[in-house]
Image (cartoon, rainbow, N blue to C red; front, side, top):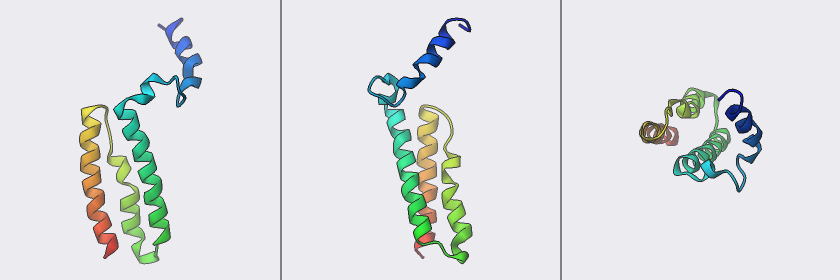
Length: 95
């Protein structure tokens, strides 16, 4: 493994994100890319409405992705929990 498989895998690193990335087409990877895009939108929304008094709540909202852990069904469950917590925090943000 150390002499043959890992060096081969390291050379194939350039395929990530391209048309030949077979693992990038899985539902889990698509979900992860969606989560990254959602987080960018979240940061834009937070920065647009940020005030000194709303900073603690903004930090809580920005830290939500740290609650997403695991692989497979464990990750899916943590996404559901994190998104529910995020929705409650956005309600507080709205007033």
